[in-house]
Length: 386
Image 1 (cartoon, helix red, strand yellow):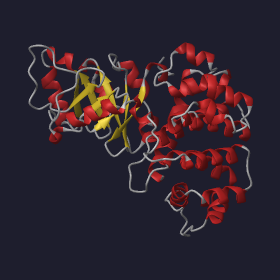
Image 2 (tube, one colour; image 1 turned 180 degrees about the vertical axis):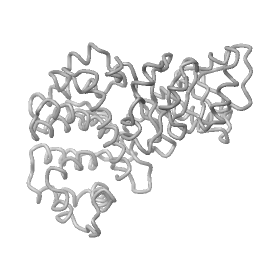
Image 3 (cartoon, one colour; image 1 turned 90 degrees about the vertical axis):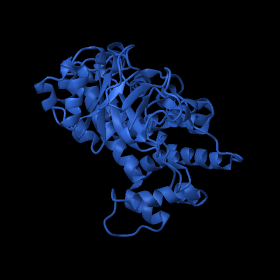
Image 4 (cartoon, helix red, strand yellow; image 1 turned 120 degrees about the vertical axis):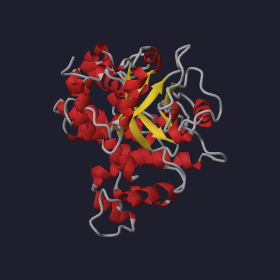
């Protein structure tokens, strides 16, 4: 498994209270990485280079795995160590963790302390499973943060974690869509019209006309084309100019993603946007690996991006796609996760795909890992420029 680390490593994004990705969390709840997993993931510079400037939070069951060869591949300025609290019952663990902290590593104590074990004075930063009992409100001092809450699966848990003093969050709360208060459906109709135009490769003038009806989407498109990702010193001020500058293929891709960025310019980013970008890029990379042409790659990308539209719109996926006239295999993937594209969409949704799911999707571990490196790199850039 050393040549194909992804199947044995769960990857989850971590965001701060401003809805910005700050790190990736590696390792499953109740199962930290062992020495083979650490070497497989960090043995080359690929992961940390791909996700820069994000950090990695690594779950560990036992600090015995932190041998000198392992520490040599874990740069202290990029890796946080989330050590299971039960390990503190072993003599010498607290002292060793304090030494690692003095050496520059950020250490989080993962879970409640074992009975009879006092909290080490030098180790005050914590990680907690939000599905378990959380500290009381205000119990975690911000001075020793950032404290991490994971498996935060809805906004109620998010608020409870925030009240307790956590400032980093990981979980499906990020995928909870909502219909703004007072929304009469006009905004949703504009978005669905834009989706239909994109799906049928509409004329640029039709896209421009629709954009003019949607101030929020227009704002984000102009912001994007004037960002560092595209800027060559010329200010883009109009839609026709933006369409010409991006090119038709890129325009379609960005507009698909910008559907998730429909918030007020002063409000926090929508965390569904980088997730949609991640899914789209991963499915596209796998299609390209298989020799798919540009049209096939575009459809794979679209399937990944559109897979969150039911959550965004708070409506059944069948209602979302009914007027889009999507190819049959794309619709089957979105509605029922059928076909190879549907199986790969299941992979994109999983933090830790099992070998059986990989086999059904026709993907080996090494290729899936490379697709994830590519997808995370691209999603991080998207989040920073939108």
